[in-house]
Amino acid sequence: MGYTFTNTAATTAAVANRYVTSTNMKVGAYTLANTTPVWSGAGLVTVTHTEVGGGVDTLGTIVVLGIDMAGQGRTDIITPLNGTVATGTVPFRTIGSITGVGWVIGTGNDTIVVGVAAGNIACGSQGSLGGVLVNNAVAAAVVISDARGTILTIPASQAAGTYYNLNGVDFGGYLKVATTSTNDVTVFHTGTMPSVYAL
Image (cartoon, rainbow, N blue to C red; front, side, top):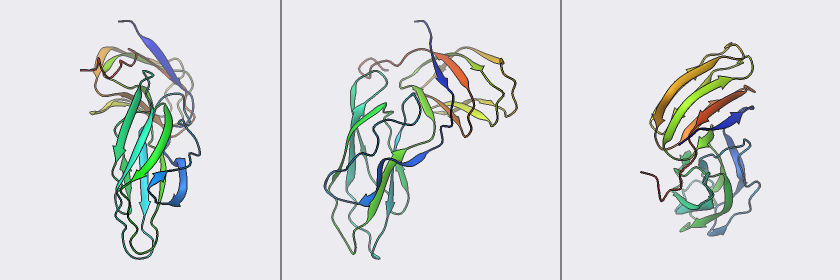
């Protein structure tokens, strides 16, 4: 299989309220503020819970329906965590709906926001990474990782035109590019396989 490429030319910092801005928890569909990450690839969904009224609600689950990098419909079920962030496991390119299930009010109506985790997911399945090209002088470190952890860290101040030849290193789960600055890098990788083909 040959390589395709993904360019990331902007910050990929997390956006906590990208999909649903702060709202009361409920059973039913939430109003979507946006349907895609800020960047061109996919992202993992985050749910941030805030307790209201001194007693934690029965939080239930959040059901996310959307489209992945292979164009397939996918579902992710996220269980909110009291007072903190829960992160899903499915890389979505487009969100179709976000629905609360099993929530029961306690003392006061707890609130949530739903957003996108940091990092542009360039490939949503396992595959092979050919290399990384730095297109501008790197202002901050760029981390290339997969579901297992860091593959490569490009240091700040790396010169434009630098190419890291990774000789087809395997990655698992997904391939992610993360940066906190307006760096411009291109990763060369195999394309996303439909989940029915993924091993």
